[in-house]
Image (cartoon, rainbow over all chains, first blue to last red; front, side, top):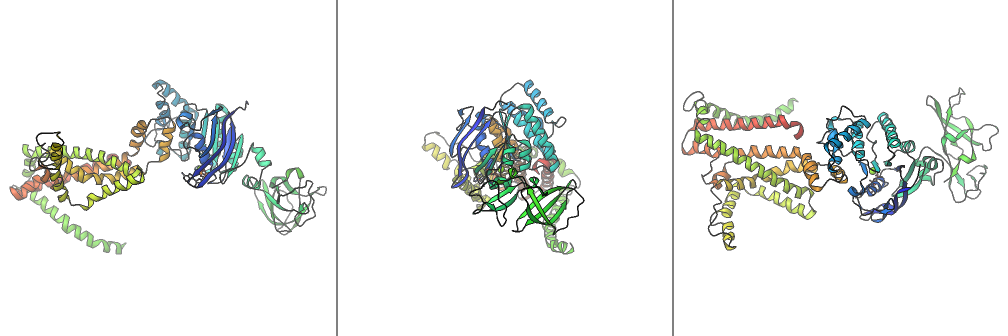
Amino acid sequence: MASTTQIEVCSIGKKYGKFKALGDINLGIAEGEFLSLLGPSGSGKTTLLTLIGGYDAPSSGRLLFDGQDMTNWPAKQRGFGMVFQGYALFPHLTVAENIAFPLKVQKRSKAQIADRVAQMVEMVGLSGHEAKKPTALSGGQQQRVALARALAYEPKVLLLDEPFSALDKNLRGQMQEELRRLHRDLGTTFVFVTHDQEEALALSTHIAIFNHGELQQIGTPEEVYERPANRFTAEFLGDINLLSLDGSTGCLAETAIELPKTIAGQSHLAIRPEHMRLAADDDAIQLPVRLRDRVYLGSKSRLLLETSGGEELMLYLDNDPTDMRPGSELRVAWDARDSFAV
Amino acid sequence: MRAFLFLICPLLLFLGCSYLLPFLGIMQLSFSDPDPGLAQYRHVLSDPLTLSVIWRTLRICAIVTVVSVIAAYIITLLWVRGRPLVRSLTELCIMIPFWISVLSRAFGWMSMLSNRGLLNTWLKDLGLIDASLQMTRNEFAVVIGMSHYLIPFAVFPLATAIRNVDERVLTAADGMGASRLRIFWQVFLPMTASGIIGATLLVFVFSIGFFVTPALLGGGQSVLIAELIYLWIFQIPQWGMAAAMSVILMIAVGGILVLLMRRYGEVAK
Ligand SMILES: Nc1ncnc2c1ncn2[C@@H]1O[C@H](COP(=O)(O)OP(=O)(O)O)[C@@H](O)[C@H]1O
Ligand SMILES: [Mg+2]
């Protein structure tokens, strides 16, 4: 994929009165990318999306589109599609009329509009619902109308603000599938806001992680998951085992386990649960732990462990018949390359 | 549940004595005075003079309703969506009329609109007119006076609807390139339809029974139904006719209410 930078966010900041909602944000979005803005509630994701869409003006910094300064362009001039949180459908218009609205604004011919609406209805799988009002639709269907309306005029960029947060888990999975397919088929740039890390990992080509209005890290899902830049990112992206480091010895605290790499200035060693295992005799690292609990999950079991220093660990075990009771003394191991200091 | 019924008893008793009994009396009058049967109704609905009063009432009330709802819509927009200063001023202007009796307001308009009133004097001083304009004792004055009274009542249903408009929907329309005019006519206005219907109903139903304002500002020149009933009771006693007219008025108002609520019940919630 040709990755020319389409949107550039340069030192963007946003203040509401004295409150700093966004710090000094710098990031680039390539054409055709699926970028997720991920972060806990209140971290400034919607604010950044709103600024990119042109629905609000930044307090500082510049926005570029294909190299042109678009900072002062109003939303209509940018012409990006937007799926608002809560969908923001026109409640008094039918599905077809909702989708047709932006096309009517563009003064396209009646025949063109009818064609395009039919095409969009088909694309999002709403055939047969054209004449219904939004209130007569389920959450998932409203979601599809919002998507169809935002995509109707073939925008170069589609912005989505937590589009699936109101849907139940099954439906969310299905809609995620459809969004992936849409992105693949259309090749449009998607900027997608979510607070759900699994959703971000599953959908995106790139993820930008936010906390307290600051960009924590940006990268591919693999990069941010496997090599988190800091502890916040590591913890936010999924379960993680953290072990205290002893700064003076470069060892794990209260053990003699020396780490292969010297890790200066970091306080914890982090290992994802799926990279931790029960130690075999030939493992280099062997950390003694005590079993606190074992949770049967069907295809696997989750072991909850405790180190001698009282730190909690977790790992997954393919089911085996060994009878381990809470209180058993075990040893865990991991490959040094799977661990990172934070 | 028992206790609840017991507690509500006094109210039912009061309503029964003060509304139901007199109403039954009026029903009885309408079918018996002076002729038993439907004679009074037949007369009311065939007498050209009476019919012209009914027709005028409907016409004036329709005009008043349109004027009031449009004016109230603009006022409500200022009140709900204006800048803070505009908001508080508008709120004051909406509230003040509630503290002034309908009688004082009618007299106020008379001193404003009469031949030697404030408005005519000003217009003459400015040299815009030579002779006084006839602005009282006609339908114009009645419409002004009634609308003035009814506008605040139209504001409240409109305010509820306008407050409920989801700002993001307007933002979405703007982002799609819709002009302000288009957003207002095709998005904002339809989204407040429930409030418009509610306000229209309220004002129309209220206006049909108006007595003081049209009597004073109309100066006997534009008699409406309520004034006609008054005449039939106190000036040319025809109590049976007055009663029949009252019953018709009640049924008409009730009928309009039921019809419109059926039709728009789901929109107006
Ligand atoms: N219009 C506004 N006025 C004042 N504060 C705002 C406004 N919009 C957002 N904020 C604040 O900015 C912060 C970031 O908000 P937002 O971008 O909506 O977060 P997110 O979408 O990540 O949940 C929040 O603390 C929020 O309270
Ligand atoms: Mg948000």
